[in-house]
Length: 116
Length: 111
Image (cartoon, rainbow over all chains, first blue to last red):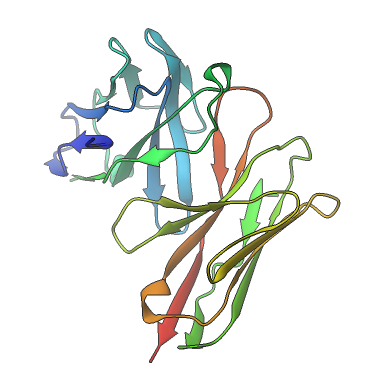
């Protein structure tokens, strides 16, 4: 079991460029999440998904889009990167209440993104 | 007011010391509570869940006080390897699985 994996691990973008971060989990979790972590701000939820084909906005969704076409994958897109999006991005997944699971979240190793 | 508040520290303690962290949360409807540990430049990992009756895992003891809406973590006999940031985590009301993370409390254990 790889758990939660993220690609890429590091990326440097120029302002205005686009990119997609990929998150994959092999635990058959229903729920998946994207967070960003900035110094002094803690983890902030960007978008989340409660199942294949569904997504919802979190606390800081502006400038990001997501897609969950397959249960095991959750993609985070930046259409036009800005320096304010320089951050560490973490993906997480969890079981759902409906399947009798707990809401413990399991995290990927993170993607360090710098926007110049 | 933040939904989950923690003293960011840092807490600097010698090896073998006992140290306690507290955390307060604002949503009285929250049902699940956790402590996560995050090492420098790594992902957060679950340390322990927090149950109403309090629970212990080796040198770690977690307590929940629903009436006062605070959670605590006690670490006994601190080890150098305990140096990390400890995140207090609370779920939101409803079945979305969403968690709210505190900013974290940094612990440095010194020889």
